[in-house]
Picture 1 (cartoon, helix red, strand yellow):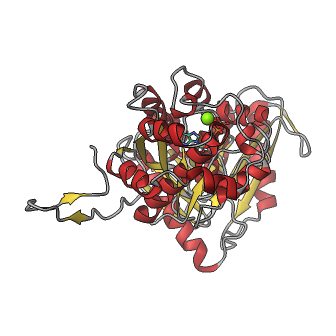
Picture 2 (cartoon, helix red, strand yellow):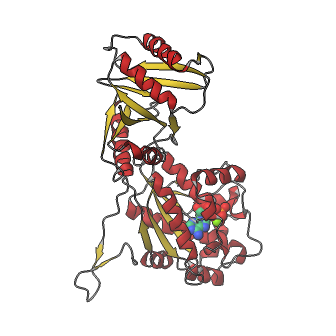
Picture 3 (cartoon, protein in one colour):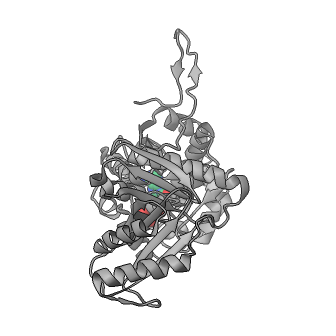
Length: 415
Ligand code: ATP
Ligand code: MG
């Protein structure tokens, strides 16, 4: 019986010097958190891969599913651990090819990370290949094999496998800073959130509900999206802001055709205030050029004028069809199309402006106490936390209120 292990491969490009050790440590931590509780295990680095040893081989599929959900993972190999001995490798090769499904032709692909093993990769290929021909009576095909037996020889051990499962690639969450994503629970913003996480950012979601004018259904959808992305450890926390009252005020004061853009500018300001507290470096939206009236170049510029930090739009050049496919792939689509209004459908004008200017929006906002609105929003925040080893919540700030002994938490007025 051979021990089983999962070998985690990651992209090595761009990972030079100190950067690389950091990347590996973050990925190792994320993997440990993902598989913790499944089976006693050990995760350590060997020759530019991470090795997850399994004490309970029955849990292999669970471990593979969890690890391949993590950004930074290029693919994992479902391996047999053997001694650095050709006979052992041959026996493990037979077992691994029995797991390779239906195949008629095969090849062996050996790699040595250490040249202290006296047998060359080519010799391993020939000898183990012969062993497999003897066992299965099938043909070798070096150019288009139906199955491949991989053998990786590293310090101390060898790993033999025929099965690879792809991960999402990208960078481990926690290697690219923190962002605040405006998360509507529509189709686009969960995909934008996923894209940022795949590039290594830890994401704090910010959802605006129509409460108290509407019910809380959209908040629960946003939290559900957080739960789906939790498998990839992307979202640390989602804040929810009841936005209905603010929208009502805007609708009374501002010209109807500019309302949507003024809502959006308020969202950006509230997002920035939260980003400052969270020590996040940018805001993210799910906008895509020309998709709806608020997403023309002119309107984007007029909204951006109030932002002081970078406003990232990972989907700006994507077609809706592609975004939908991606939402289906990452598993958020079904939740995004569930019925239930967020604040977007409240107080919507019949004909929104498609070419607003900064001046028009400034004028449109002139009668509003924008600062108070932002303050109100921050006071009425609630949030939910998600499993995300990269996330650090902001320090809780205390404010002394008149008559209050202990002061009160001002980060978050809710639970
Ligand atoms: P989505 O599918 O992400 O809702 P959309 O195509 O419906 O996008 P808009 O409604 O114009 O487009 O919203 C553009 C972006 O503004 C969203 O992608 C999101 O980042 C942000 N946004 C809109 N509504 C909300 C909301 N209720 N809460 C948080 N962010 C929002
Ligand atoms: Mg929307």
